[in-house]
Amino acid sequence: SYETIEFSITEGVAVLTLNRPDSLNSFNTQMHAEVRSALKEVKKDSSVRCLLLTGNGRGFCAGQDLSDRNVAPGAEAPNLGESIEKNYSPLLRTIRSLEMPVICAVNGVAAGAGANIAFACDIVLAAKSASFIQAFCKIGLVPDCGGTWSLPRLVGPARAMALSMLGDKVSAEQAEQWGMIWKSVENESLMDEALSMAKHFATQPTKGLALIKRAIQASATNTFDEQLDLERDLQTLAGRTEDYREGVAAFMEKRQPAFKGQ
Ligand code: T3D
Image 1 (spheres, rainbow, N blue to C red):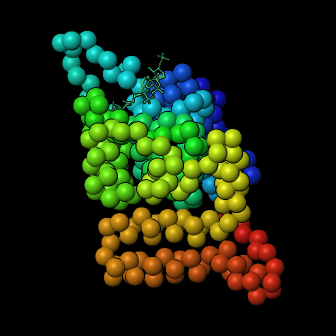
Image 2 (image 1 turned 90 degrees about the vertical axis):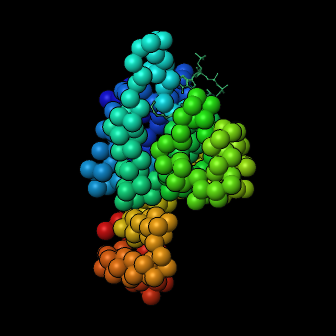
């Protein structure tokens, strides 16, 4: 069992809740290890068809736990590159490559790595009281967890640069207006909306959704022609799934499809 996260798998939905509310769910070594282990369970369990990531308390995630980075004067600097290589980058790669929709329900402030982890998820819902802060610049760091890649693509280079250099707080509503996230919702309904979306996904053609995820991700670096070729290849795979067969049959028979995620 876990101490720094809560984790459950119910009817095809895995819910991973960051649970260090006293430090706004900032990441220490133990939380990294527990998140890694939970995500391994998600990958191993073929019944899981959607992952929902959220946090306990008034924050979503305040990034790295800075109490682990407070070195005495004259002491050796921590090797942040090592920390990123071992902890953060694998987490981001897992979220992006997971072959199912990953929903992030941002329940409160998302700062530093916390913000960029959210932006790496497939669909981000945020409570009206939530906010996003590229806090890195305020302590002399560079946005990580893919923020320098995702932000310019989400909001354009002008906003990405200013947000990264100023560290201004962006409200959930502003984030929605700028297209940084899917939707901001009333605080009280965040988890209901997120869970109902997750349950919906758990009844959908998981393989097709995973291929959509790959296609949209690849478009960030592909030319139009490359993307047409990729769509051809992915559609070939989608066309061989059981769920596609079921989708067409259900349409022809004017009934609801029963997708198995296969
Ligand atoms: O190091 C590496 O491995 C490299 C990777 C780096 C990735 C990163 O994420 S670097 C960026 C780290 N994060 C930050 O710089 C954000 C720091 N936090 C804040 O700026 C503020 O806490 C917030 C803007 C997020 C929220 O502000 P506010 O006023 O709502 O809350 P608060 O009072 O600042 O925080 C509440 C408590 O959480 C407080 O503890 P206390 O006083 O009640 O005992 C605060 O110290 C603690 N807390 C918040 N963030 C962190 C934290 N403790 C440790 N580490 C944190 N990141």
